[in-house]
Amino acid sequence: MVVNPREYGWECIYQRAHAWMSYQMLLKLDPGLRTQEWAAVLQATLTHDHGWMEWDEALLDSQGQPASFVVSGVDKAIKISNRGIMLAACQSLESAVFVARHVEELYGWRPEAALVEHVEGIRRQRLAWMKCLELDVESVDRSYQRVLWADSASLILCVEDEDFVKELSLSLDDKPYQLIRQSGHWEMDPWPYQVDQIAVSVEVLPLHQKRFATPAELRQALQEAVPEPKKWVVKRPTRRGG
Image (cartoon, rainbow, N blue to C red; front, side, top):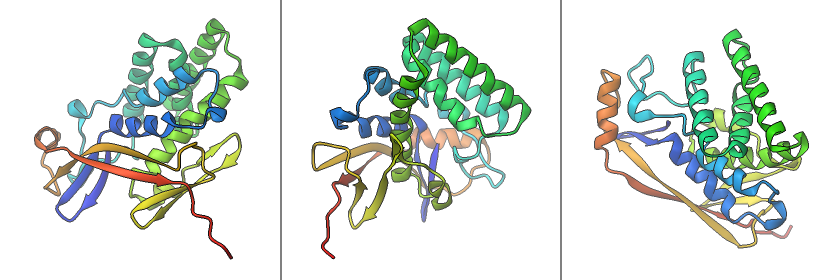
């Protein structure tokens, strides 16, 4: 769950809602930037966080605050990623290839032995699916870049942890992209759309409480929170003379 601090408590965004934002980032992408596996890219982007089920597992940090998705222990990471890949595979092996590839990206750098073994098992399964579907490594890597690009763009917009955002990479086909906050909107450079601006939106959950005694209390607060629509407008960059 994305958790941003507020004076009144917290503004929360479910992981699946962030994935919905990521999907919206791709919908109007210039046709020249789309790949042959486009339907699976869109599906994987939309569902890549379906392994998260906050309504069952809303957790607290050591101070009784809603735990950010940024910190995931080994057991939690394995459980969430296994469930997400399984759900994707039940619908489309092609989209499951990209969800699996995303798990490798997220956890492949971590040194914990259980995660190293987990990621290697996922990689082997992904390669077996690719062989079954006759997908080559180059095309999968190029298509996966779109999933990662949209995921990173969504996180840059909705996560207010500056240290985390600084670590995100936003690129397509080895070309770096920037999302720059302006007054009342964002600008993306270079501009990857045919329209002059796009808008992405999700419903956020305001929690008017700083700390919670138990995970059950947090889950109850999430269930009772009144959703509030939130929109981000992204525009073509303004070229300024100099």
